[in-house]
Image 1 (cartoon, helix red, strand yellow):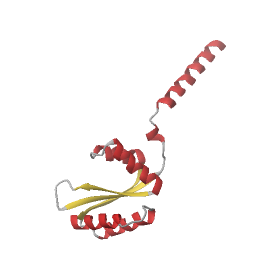
Image 2: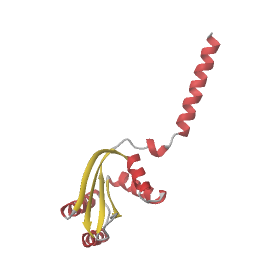
Image 3: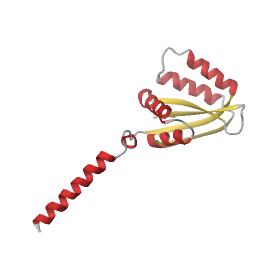
Image 4: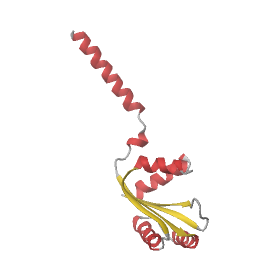
Length: 137
């Protein structure tokens, strides 16, 4: 009976080690909860935002938050926000919307390093609009 308990315990330990070593590090790397805001702006507002970014001496939290405020104040439609979003959900969203693994990883690393991020998308049915997505901790 004692030998059987040792064998079962050993099997459980092997299973746990296998599970831990095979788990996806990107899904367990960060338990931070994020807030996501999305809105549509005119293409001229988008172009102004891109010009603002090109004038930054560095990318930091305050610059991105200031750009978010500019975009928010100029949002013309499709605004929404949601809290409680995980990093893996953000990753899956970007991948499902045409971002490559490489570009997704860059956006995720920027988010983790700076603490917030803004990502732009083409509007699905109106070529005169651009979608912005702001993510913050």
